[in-house]
Image (tube, rainbow, N blue to C red; front, side, top):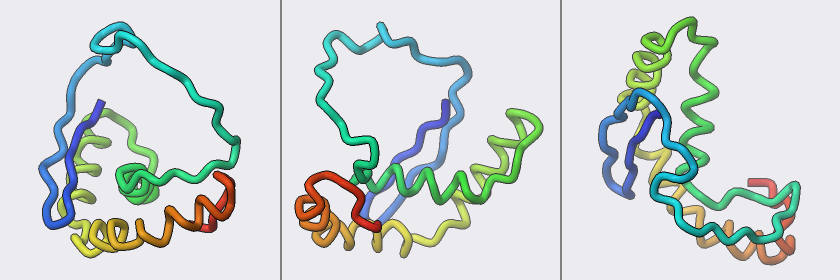
Length: 105
């Protein structure tokens, strides 16, 4: 698992955590909500992961994946993160107008 943090004006280093976290650890109760198949993802973090994923070219080892993700993360312009945050006031009404469907973002 890879963890990192973003904020409007900074980002923390990525951290590679060996192993995985099972459903039972730290999760007591999960309430599920109906979700549309084409619903937009309003989380800026998911868009950052998409940005990283598009630039990782088929790593052949965990080390290569970790190294490449770190490199992309460190080279990523803070403007990308700030633009995602700045787009939220437009994304949310667009999502409401689309009734939770695809918005084009």
